[in-house]
Image 1 (cartoon, rainbow, N blue to C red):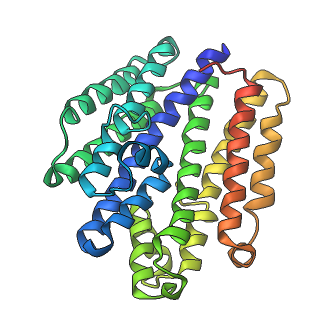
Image 2 (cartoon, rainbow, N blue to C red; image 1 turned 90 degrees about the horizontal axis):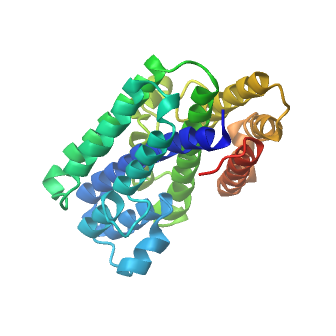
Length: 314
């Protein structure tokens, strides 16, 4: 497969995953803003920081973190290249480049997602309509993912796309954890308090892990247990450990397919071995923020190495 085609499949998947992740973040911010109006502006800023869009927002709007403005910026602002509408368009553009390497059903699902969201986000979304719009974004993402899983050959194109999905997902989960611990808490005095617990519950909801967490741990809300669940629990499809296992599987299949040793395989294995085989108490002892910063750096380095190894041209 040509590097340009592989890169298009990879970035198509990354952008689709990013659109869903950002929809989940907006939903989390909206839930908190409804219940805690006194701190709504700081909560909306934390959403922007998690999405990596705070600097761009301040460049455009200063520090006026009002709900409607932040939501519009994240959803559909044409001046924001990371808005959901923008990244879905880029996903569709990449899908069109690689159209002959995917099934008709996958192309139609991606194209339909772009047209549906274009119509939904043609105008500014009213607050009353926001939950339905966010649900529609998640449904479109699920439709593309289901079609991709159900119709694509398990070949190198499939593996490149899955790499993009899980690299993006791991990055998002790590950022959510980091921002929660260092920006969402009003102060360290609130750790373990009811305020802290509400925020951890919101984080669980933002990664669709609320019910699964309670199935596993019961009603106890603990920073240590939630971090363990989102970092190390391999049956949780948005945990760092799960995402890295999936990436390593796909990298191994690509290496066997091309018959060449790739540096990315070594780097992916090292992330799992050196960072995700430790007990959660050890991670906390060394500092959760420091652990996540190191993981994000390693994940980004792996992404760059994949592009070099397989000669992507975006």
